[in-house]
Structures are given as structure tokens and as C-alpha cells.
Amino acid sequence: MKPDVLMTRPAATDLAGALTRSFTVHKLWEAEDPATFLREIGPRIRGVATDGGAGASAGLMDAMPNLEIVAVNGVGVDAVDLDHARRRGIVVANTPDVLTEDVADMALLLLLAAAREAVLGDAHVRSGAWEREGNRPLSRRVHGKRAGILGLGRIGRAVARRLEALKVQVAYHNRRPIESAYDYHADPVSLARAVDFLIVTAAGGAGSRKLVDRDVIDALGPDGILVNVARGSVVDQAALVEALREGRLAAAGLDVFEDEPRVPEALRNLPNVVLQPHQGSATVDAREAMADLVVRNLEAHFAGRLMPTGVDLG
Ligand code: DGY
Image (cartoon, rainbow, N blue to C red; front, side):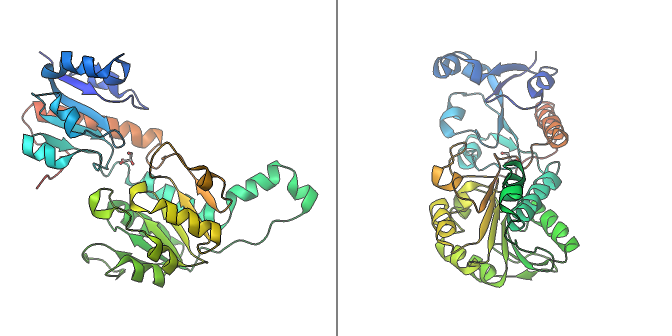
């Protein structure tokens, strides 16, 4: 008999179809009353397929007394209650590697777009302002400047490789220095002070909450650009809006926000931000590879094999 798996949210690819090869799939988002639905099917469910945003709370896991595995369709597991999973002996898997280059592309895109004011330039042409008012003001160069990577993991390194091609000098901050040719800064303020651009690629969660606060933003300064492709929780969003509005920070490129998909009007109205609706891994290529990995993690678990990309719960 196929194990029962609960999907929390629809995926952009046909993850549900792929899962039905090996599993009986239950779709939480199609339930009229999710609580009643979970009460009815909860005891049958042995696996959850979820995404980085929905994750799996302790409450959700506890609606499924026989749950064995949470497979995340994403690299970030900050929305999964990992302590609770560990306590209950539930294993967790995610989808690293297959999305790394796409998220790094997004970081580069946001940096270039923010520095070169690409969105304002696009609007200038579309609106006819170019013809009416003439050229736009000059923008900022990226080539040859200095960038700080906040969180030099897989994605941070992929961003750094791209920046090297632009002759951008890279430094980084992690909780601890790692084997790397880049300069290490022991705290984010010191890193921000030393660079022109700060790129956030740190994992979300309690350990990185509001790591980029007012002090870090002020250290980056009025010519600085902040890019965030990690999690909105890593940046103090209110402090960021204030700094951008007051000209204490030049610009920002943001793919992630504090309370997605809600983005405050104050941020949406700023001209010096480039905004994306959490699209880092949202290419057909990455999402198909991610869905495939979700299925393979679940299949491996239920076949008693090592999961390709299990998360170490300590
Ligand atoms: C990820 O992979 O964690 C993406 O941000 C989607 O949540």
C-alpha cells in the first residue's frame, strides 16, 4: 500500500502528480475546513510535502500522530519547527544545491538593477519621459567595488563567484570563519562598514533574526546597497524603509520580505528599491529539480534508504 502524504500547498510544478507515483496524496489547501480534514486523515499521514514558506508547525505535526518525515520543497527550513521534529523523531529533508545558481543569479540581478536603476530606466522609456524630459540622472557602478556576503554558504559562495567576474572584492561574515580566500569580518557592522554592497544569503530562523538592523544599515551608509535573497526575517524591515526614505542607504534589491506576500506600502512606494515576489528559485529548471528531489527524499525514507538531502537535526 502506498504511504499517505499530505501536501500543504500547491507547487508551481506538478509535484502532486509526481508524488502520486509512490504515494497517496492529500491536498490540505483543497480542504473546505483544514482542521476537520486533518482530524479525519491525520492518523493515516506518514509524510508531509511542504514548501519553505508554509513549513510545518508543531501544531500541524501533532495533527499527524504517525508522521515520519517532513520533506520541504525548498532549501530554507526555518518555517519547520525543527526542535519539535527532533523530539518526535520526525526526519526533515530539503532541496539544497539544485536551486543555488538560480538564487545567486537573482542576487546579482537585484544588485545590478538597484545600482544601475534598471527599473526606473525601464519606466522612463515606457512612460515617454525620455522623450519629454531627456536623460535620467547617472547611476552607480558595480564593477570594481566591494561587496559583503552575509552568510557564506552554498548560495553566498555562488554569489561571490559571480561578483569575482565583475572584479568586485568580496568579504563575508558568518558566525565563525570558514575555509575561504575572502576576508572575514567577525560582526555584520564591521562587514557593512568595509563594503559598498551587502548581500544577505544567511539562513532564516531565530539565529539570524534582524541581523541586519539599523546599525548595520548605517554602517553600509548613504552610498550603500542592500540585497536580500535569503529571508525577510534577517533584515529589520522598518529600519530599512526608514533608511531608504531618509537617504541613509542608497538603494535595496529585495526578493524576500518580513510577512510575505504582504509588503508595506511605505516600501512599495520607494523609488530606490527593486522588488521581486520571492522568485530566487522560481525558474522552471530549478523548480523541476526541486520537486524531483522532494519525491526522491520521500521515496528513500519509505524504502529505508538514506535520503539524498536530509537535514541534520543534531
Ligand atoms: C527556499 O528554497 O527556501 C526558497 O526561498 C523558497 O522558500
